[in-house]
Image (cartoon, rainbow, N blue to C red; front, top):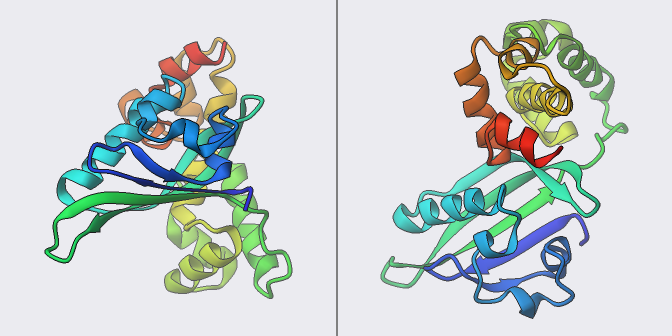
Length: 219
């Protein structure tokens, strides 16, 4: 499955099993080349530490990472969005003995779904108005669905919750603006964030680096 990354790690966050897709995205010909290494050792410096930090949080207290929207760089330095899940593995006594993770690339929306047209209008509204505050009430009124229905259908058709769709639109715009010379504070305002710190927190949560680090790494 070329759009899916799968791995298992030991309690030191070292790979003990990975699939071919992950090996290829890390520039390795064979999965065995990455075994015994941490994400910090195999990913670029602006991504690896973030992934290892995630791993150690899961391994330390067993808290799972679920549906984490993340921006990755794929071969050719092309950015792309994925959803990541990480889960602690336990022995029969409940002790953490490692972790498993899976990330899958966001696919094209399910245009054949009966609710697609209404949800496409929601998606278009988000992409047009991401620089403004967007309330769930706006989206339910636009689609004619309840909050619960909207959440479920967005997840089914776009693989994202409405809130994740907003984050994706804002951060996608921000990554493009960061290739220019606009001050980061101005970029934050243009992308719907009330202040620089809120923008930086959200940006780092989804990319693993601060806006300034992202700018430096992509020049």
